[in-house]
Length: 319
Image (cartoon, rainbow, N blue to C red; front, side, top):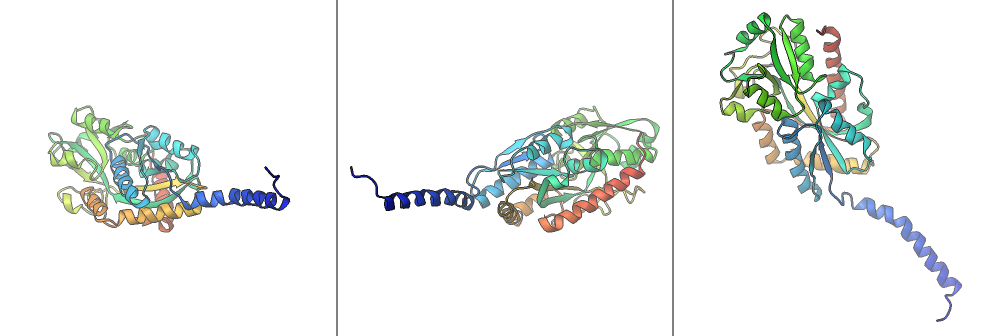
């Protein structure tokens, strides 16, 4: 075999160098090329889990890759948030951020902050309220009277959440309440149905099946206006309680992710939430039909919410 000429060798080396530089660009063009993990910082069955699974199914259609949901409950959502932030900023992990977890920034020091993630969009907004078992407390006034006479137990999602902020506010108004946290939604529901707690703090729609089955009833919503679907249930404003912390849920990705990948995810999310299937999901969840807030508008809204929660926390004495 004749030896390779100097000219041929030079062209061969040049081709190898050009191929090496082309590989990263080629890889970027293929994003996403593998499954995108969707972290839910709560157990199965609750509102965050339901929202994430609906979004995941719609994103699979938009992104042409699988989007498996991974439940990581614990610490009022802290365990799941830690998993996202500790992972690589490569766009292959996203998470659902419920305001249960977001409120932690207003109630106690955290190892994470808003700068650690990018909000792809707020995907659902709905009021929260108190639910009781069907055979207990005919209305809010009856519950209020009971809670002023003797301590009552209320199941919440976790300490530091909007649930606890609201409970502390009610404590400051003379109600005697013991908050009982449950990381897994199913455990909260079972605690109420089993008579282990007197009431359940929950976003509207999360327990729709139990309400439809006459196992639970809402007795108050912490909202300015009554829900059209549950007009018989009064609002906190009507009952003289100046507190309104709506439940919101956003889809987030780790800060530092390639802007092109963030854009691809944001655009896919916007298309997903505009589908008839998602709009039906919002209606069935008793959520606002105008729930979606894109990235650019989400950040100012989140900052206002955080300021509102901080104001309530600072003005409300804890027990």
